[in-house]
Image (cartoon, rainbow, N blue to C red):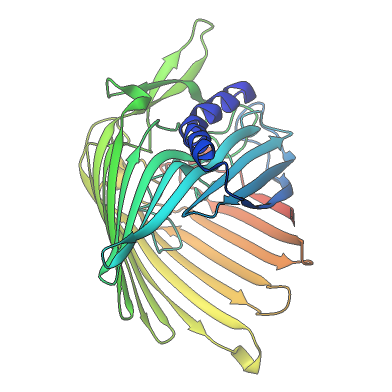
Length: 418
């Protein structure tokens, strides 16, 4: 997305939070306000060793990201948090983008035998327990240009009400202004053969991006068993694509979003050194890979076993295995239609918080195999590093990710925290 458009969308997303904060500041201006300013600066570089599969793609990419965070707290029961984000990338202009990750007013108090919280503004919310993918996580839109693992999310304007009691936690969401998923541009790697248009977006709803989405969630811990049950009624975060030829004869894919209804559950059972995990959903109204509407169910199920103090050291070794399944199979627009994930996690528990995780994702329907490697280590109180590699060992021609078959990469990130 052009930088100007990125700033424009971030500014629109910020309006509700800034208006609320201004009104709060007027009424609470006489109070003394505590403040805390933190954040991070990230320097990163990626190298793609294989020759590109599509014209104009680059073999190297480098840049930086800045994410400051301001937290204000008054004498009353309120606080305000703002966290803007900016990234510059030297290879892909689409990856140079800005976003308002957080900008919300938090108010809280007691209600009956519990406590309530109300967040108004832009925020990020996470649902889920599994490692290979976060299947049920749907509140925020994916910032796909940040990383192909889909874990980075865009800020979402919302009203978020929470009521916590001994019987569990109830959450209600009203979400305004749909965020469009980010995709790599013509010079970027890890993209489809046809560039995805991020400007000419269409919606099935007459309200378009301003349709109000609603969601609710109940979560509770029953001894060793953690359970979350959620419902989402709103605009899909996953687009379908419509081919388009412009006046110059250039072919692109335009994003199209439709309303969906999703019921989901996430659960985790802890038994000594074992963790058993599940995420499952039923989604109605979504379009499949052929562009036809199809209701479907999907799940991720697996477990993790941790060996503590391996070989008499302070290190812990974890073994993970998960199965991803989508009943649409070949009609699914997800790469996790029937995949097995195996990983090893090693935490040294040293002063530098060194952690290593290596995994393999194997497609049970195709020959596709993907390896991932990640090393994290703290260099000092303020500096840290992450060395990462994703290796596409074999990508089946029938696989949805075949266009990225030559996009294995090695990445180094150096982060300064302040």
